[in-house]
Image (cartoon, rainbow, N blue to C red; front, side, top):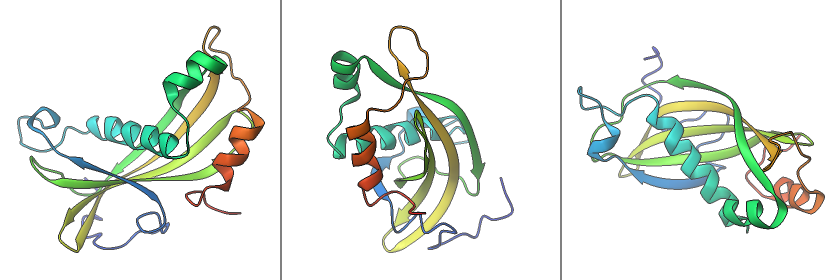
Length: 159
C-alpha cells in the first residue's frame, strides 16, 4: 500500500470526475484470506470498465473480432494501490484515454470506493492496449472511423 491512503474525494488527473464510470460490487470471490480485494483483481475490474466504455461508444469486442478481425490486447500495466477494498464495497471504476496512437491507446483507470457522497481512491492504473489482427496477433492500425469516434468522446484527455 502507498502512503497516499488518505486520497478522498480527489483525483490528481481529474479522472474521478471527468471519466467514463462503471460500478462494481466486491464479492467474496474477489477477496483474499485477509478479506480484502486481491491485488490482481483490480486488473479484472479495469478490463470490465474498458469493455463497457467501448460498448457505450457502440463497439462490441466480439463484433470487432467477427466483422473486422481485430482484437485489443493488453501490452503493459502499472498499478498503484492506495487503500484496500473489502467484501460488499461498492466501487466506481473510471476510464480515461491518456494517449491515442495509430495501433494503441494508453488508459488511466481508477478504482474508487463509494459510500454515500464520500469517495476514496483505492487504485490507479496505467494500461496500454494494442489493436492486433485476430489471426496473426500482429499490431494493426485502429480503423480510421473508429479511432476518430474514440478520440471524439468526452473521456479522452485533450492535448
